[in-house]
Image 1: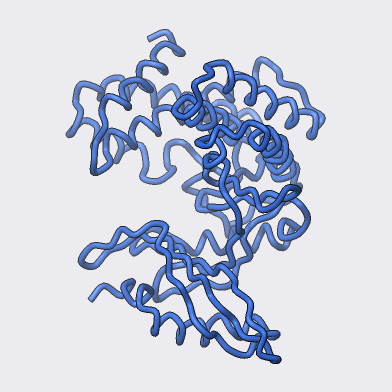
Image 2 (image 1 turned 180 degrees about the vertical axis):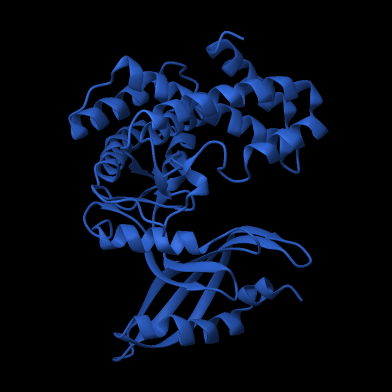
Length: 339
């Protein structure tokens, strides 16, 4: 039996949380029940990739109950300890409190190759984009810019606890060689373009990083589904698999592309994405007290185009392939780069 299935069994999970999580909450004396909600449930014979929420009812000393969202992100072969290390790192540097928050790391399980953490509660930015809720979108965007500005301004020395592979376009999972091989096999008509464009992306990044010794802490996977509105005043950012030290322009280019892509899918006003992209950048640069120079714009554009291709690759290689959606993104990058 695939071991991860144990985390889908309520009796097992209650006993497991009593043993592993309850000691971390001294104000509680018992775990009464748990409701299991799989957010990602890819389980095969012996391998898996899951994100599970355990909506857990804890019991206090006086019998009063409180429900908390306990999450597990686990993968049978990809590293997940880096998620725990990343959350601990940010928690130590003050990201657990205030109005710009993150999940609370609890522990790493070697047995499940998974990180357990207390989640942030609320709805993600993409939900409000789907609902065309413009006032809330325009409230979340400046807070998001401030969260990234705070991350990028964090003055800390690079640490081996964080992912090294995910700090470069060449090596970010699953790696350029793997992508090119899959595209060549499944969609050979796109292979030459992929090869050329990845050479451009990697050279641009490597040239900049070779020109400076400075590195910034970046989230690495900035998009609307990872921005959670916890309350009117508070947002949380989730999914720290790719947290690493590299060029801060990566977060900007990635977020701007994904924001535009998701808005274009759900909002009919073609001018709206540019409006909130500007709101994001204006807030970000004001918060950091830096200017958008032509050189920085080129770096942002490089990551924007790379994210376009990453999204196209997702549509090409996923189980239910969507080559038409991928082609529109490929054509956009060709136009951007004058191919």
